Amino acid sequence: MNDPAFLMNSVWVMLGAILVIFMIAGFILLEAGSTRAKNAGHIAGKTVFTFSLAILVYWAVGYGFTFGDHANFFVGMSDFFFSGEQIEEATLSTSVFFVFQMAFAGISITIALGGFAERAKFSVYVIFTILFGVLIYPVIAHWIWGGGWLADHGKQDFAGSTVVHLTGAMAAMAATMLLKPRIGKYNADGAANNLAGHNQVYTSLAVFFLWVGWFGFNAGSTVAVDDGFFGFVALNTALAAGSGAIAATFISWVVLGKPDVPTLLNGALAGLVAITASCAFVDTWGAVLIGLTAGIIVFYSARFFESKKIDDPIFALSVHGTAGVWGTLSTGFFATPELATVGQAGLLYGGGFHQLWVQLLGVVTSGLYAFVVSYVILYIMKKIVGIRVTEEEELMGLDLSEHGSYGYPEQFSTNHTKLHS
Image (cartoon, rainbow, N blue to C red; front, side):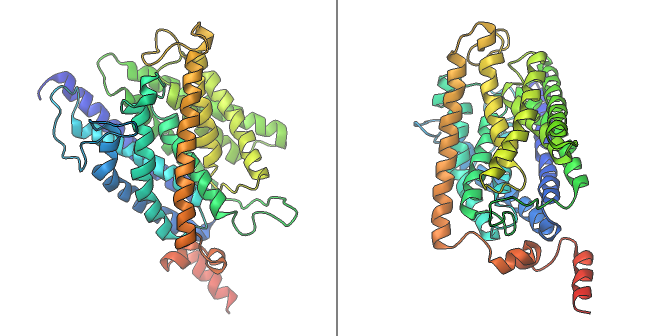
């Protein structure tokens, strides 16, 4: 097609897809930097591999289950092994739209696999990525984005606080619970030890990579350029991220006595996660308040999970889960009548409790589905093939035990030589 609007929309969404795919680089640095050096190569490699596998799964069945026609209560039932055939009435390239949505699916599984960090077998990542991409992500995506039953109720989730982030986080929670804490995380009396990540420069860079990618995530979800609305979505995204970082920094400063760097970074990410659902539905002041609240919530959420002996090395449950819940619910308060193109206005704009109820329904049903199915899958795998490496392998580090080489070979080879000299 030579229609200028069609071409511009296609270019814009393709740029958004590239930015979202680039977020994988951010997740590699975030997860590797948040964990110990002996697992860095494993984390980097498995992230590239699982994203690659997720692409093929989404091509084969995920896209069809999400957006296919002839839908049943759970999923669509067409467009499997997506051919790239152009839909005549579409306002952009169908292939570009596929790549954009494929990137979202890859991000969700990457979030989920963060809950496996430093103790899961590589083979578990392979099996779970396939099953997550078939049985979990596309089901929830269909419910909300593919014309499913939550869409019929007017569920607001513009770019995926529920579909992408909460879904991944609930799978991560199932994994952390079944894998149990890392060796040395908790003492006999239940006190937690800080198994500090090995590189805060990596995690800081990761946050900026993710922040930049998020403009593709949120602003790209407009899938159109004609009215320039993507700029407003980007503005709300930036405001929430900055507000989340500031709030998290100051709450950690007050409670801990010093501004904690990991908390600061988690605050920025929590603001981004929270605004993902609401970026197109709320005014700028609402975006600031949503981000500020997310920054405070993520600090206390991380402390809560640690107190319950849920070992979450990259804070997936708090950053993507708790903040995802808040972000989804926030439109029930702050969605304006002018911007609520899906669903209704929020409570603070005279819309009553209806939209808040719809948002809560979506959080509960989607979260429970993702958690229960993930738990069942991993429980069966645990009983049949095992999901955790041996104690010796975990202490050695997954770089060497799972792949036969270190991510930092010079550093560890030198240490090994010193120990035996």
